[in-house]
Image 1 (tube, each protein chain N blue to C red):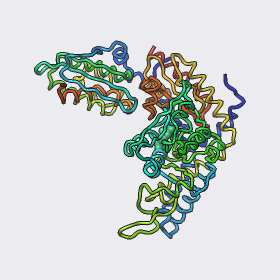
Image 2 (spheres, each protein chain N blue to C red; image 1 turned 90 degrees about the vertical axis):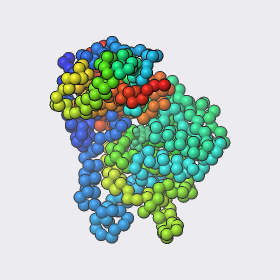
Image 3 (tube, each protein chain N blue to C red; image 1 turned 180 degrees about the vertical axis):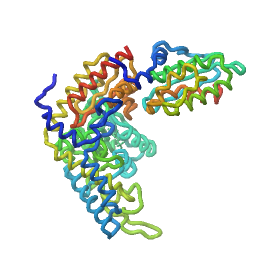
Image 4 (tube, helix red, strand yellow; image 1 turned 120 degrees about the vertical axis):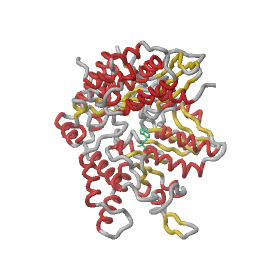
Length: 147
Length: 413
Ligand SMILES: Cc1ncc(COP(=O)(O)O)c(C=O)c1O
């Protein structure tokens, strides 16, 4: 059976691959920043953790109970943020929030790297909360240092 | 597998379906397979026409004007109250219009609840309840220093009457339960539960939000149910959103204070105080949802004029639906559904992903916790998918769901 186009784009091979083999899905006891967020629609939860040294994110990890879209987003973010400066991370999170809110035909922001595999949510409004759960948790985490 | 003779004849079902224009929609290049009736039902043309007619020719406010438009609106609006009363086997002065089942429950919690529940008292709910029939009681108990007791369900999703018996005593002032579970599709033995509650002096509120579109008229008669309050929403019984009903026993309503206040519900007002009208007007402050109520009237008229075997058709379809879902690869059904809905989880695929993949094939189901988060926790899952029927669904719909569920396996093997 051939895949309908929209479903194909929401479940891009990169998403399915990260869902199956997530990067950075582990606790991070040495985290300096962390935040947990719920998706009130389905009770899913994601916790994003960062270890920041000086101005740089040296380690990123997540723990999640959720759908393929939110888990893949969390996994992609841990990869994307590792090695970034805090300013770069803030910029990327802003770009991503804009990217997800744009209409499906809007141009891709190449700075986001593999995160643009999540472009399918731009045509699936109801799934934007899933795709942005990890990034919203990261915004919170960066806004406050964990004690 | 399917008791075919019980299903409606093809030409008859085709007529029912033609009457509901949304069923002809195409979604992502597929014919719509609408299996989210527990979230909201689709509207027959007669309901759409009635609502349009209000905007066109009955555009006045109700119970206020002496001009023609106001009189037309008032006449159409007032005709619905006795109609709802007949639907529930009750009297018109016991029928209160609200904005929905949620508002109806909140009205009882704020009005009667504050009156009869005091420190040390208790309210009983069940593990099945929708947030709408749980959170208002949580707040009331917190405010009044009362205890909220939650009756357990059995493995198959039915309410444990043994546990209910254990939780009932003289301190219990109210038992609130759903007639038909929006997640597990189990039907509560309301009459039996009401008798048990009344034996300890507790009142009984039944959340009929899911029941009204599915159960036969005799099963909805409040006198046979023996409950004290019955609530439902128009949009789950083929009517418009933003409109609902609270039925309450006359003696109780007569003693209850108003909750919201304002125009329409007063007998006389001076600057210092007001006198309230008797029920039902006492509980209907402000301009009501006029087109919603008139649309509800059209919906009940349409529904009650369908042949009685629509219920048998739906029951047969429900058995076929449960069998098809149970037979899909990797699927586990939650509980043992008795009517209208079936909730399930798919191994290795999150409910949201399943619902998105089904939607891509035009199949509409619900994914999430269906406003019953504690119940999902109790069942050991964070979310589920739910397919839910109406009389206008067909065997074709069941087959489309089964085919789409098989295709989920291709993405999440
Ligand atoms: C069992 C049950 N109770 C209450 C409600 C609340 O209905 P409404 O949102 O129309 O007020 C629903 C709707 O989902 C329901 O399924």
